[in-house]
Image 1 (cartoon, rainbow, N blue to C red):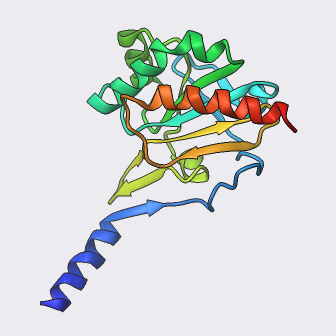
Image 2: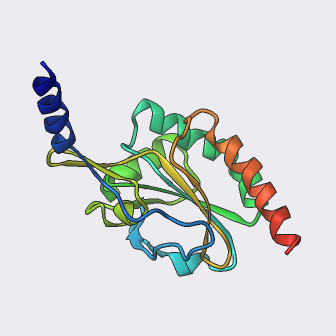
Length: 178
């Protein structure tokens, strides 16, 4: 029986291959990226130099949890932008899927298409179930100088935007004390 349990675990681990980057260290440079959004515009990390950036990874457009999270960021967008912060969503869905999702829910921020999963992997947010890749629900706050300031590996879609706002305010206060 013990052997059967070990075999099942081994098979599960092979099927649910989690592609993980090195751990993102706080105050280390954020991995660079260059991806297109739902409108075909290219976004790079350096485009946001001088601003705070909330880079949130999510599994799939127009699914319940992802819709809840995206709409919460939409509803808090004004508060977030008043903190000199930009929100960007990233998934492995294509630009067309992102365009439909953004239009359907009136999302005011870019949704980047990471169809190869490279950026999700660089940020430790890529998972694969056999040949199917998807981004895990992770968020990284990047400071104005391009350094990782906060990493969320466990996210509650309905409360996450409020958590991010509170942490952005705290991080900004910390920066003024240095």
